[in-house]
Image (cartoon, rainbow, N blue to C red):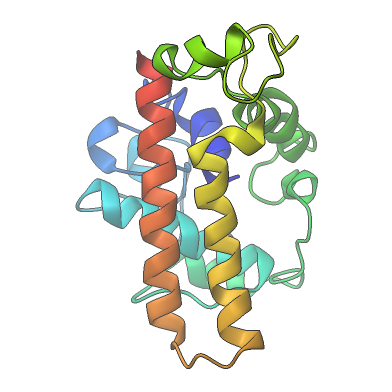
Length: 199
């Protein structure tokens, strides 16, 4: 979901809006007290990884997940809002993350659905398209690999399972350790999807 949102906010890393690429701001996160919609009204992060962490933290303020490390100024603004921590669905981001009421619906409709059915790479498709190892022949999905056969999808599942298993089986990982694992997985997914989208 975060990758889909960053694709929307940055035009798949091409930017072109108020935020500059050197700001490492993947989500259009504003400063604590913006006065408009210029580059200066948006947060800047020292490197891409810090930008991913800030994106994760910022979304955490919306959905009720504890932040990882130090937070940026806008995090505190959002965390103090009446509805903070209560966003349960991507579609509920409309009118909150952005002014547009259909913002969340656009993230799902225009980015997330496509990400979940992203076409497979050339090397992976050869065997299956001719009735390869799964014996299913052509996939009847326009050459797209089913989402459950994609590494990005499984990495996402692992990202969900780590905190769940930690909680259920009382493994004892602290919030920061779980969060660092999730950040690494999100970074992997973003990197893989970015590579796919630019090749």
